[in-house]
Length: 98
Length: 112
Image (cartoon, rainbow over all chains, first blue to last red; front, top):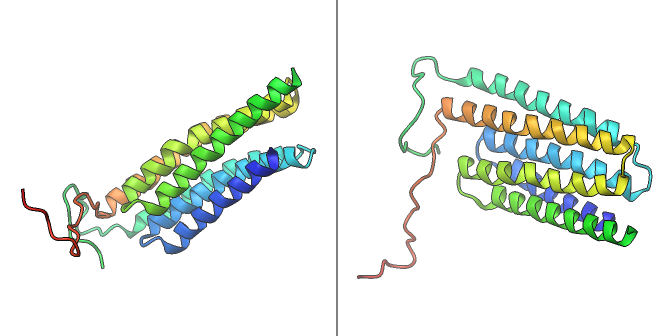
């Protein structure tokens, strides 16, 4: 039961990694990494039950917070890339970036 | 009694993994960042709830269950916040949204 859940979560993490490598924009990669981190937390919890020693939950707990802080930090870095000459956000369909 | 709890755990774990897989499939297949975020973020909180609740049923009223509840609470609060920050940064950076589906060039449009 736990082994099957572990395998399913590993498949989900692999799919998230595919999106992280293939994502056309930076935000796609950040989204995929965020999803990967969340699934890592779940995987750690399930794997602790799978081996019969659920002592890894502290690591999962810390990993949750590190994941959140890391994503927000990377986003603060990416937000600096806004062009200061044209600060208005997009509301309509624009030409797609190449 | 143990059989009932094991069955409930199996059901919750299967539902959680299924939801996580649909979210992953959405992030892989959807055409746009905004739709991708919809797919991953909607299924994310419910999938974590399902999996962690299934594990809580196995753990019973112990410290392990409290830790699982804490993990669930942190995920429950930080996942929407990070999603919001992500989409806000993308929107302020004028990431284009692909709202209109392109016509397929191979198949000509059928006349009414």
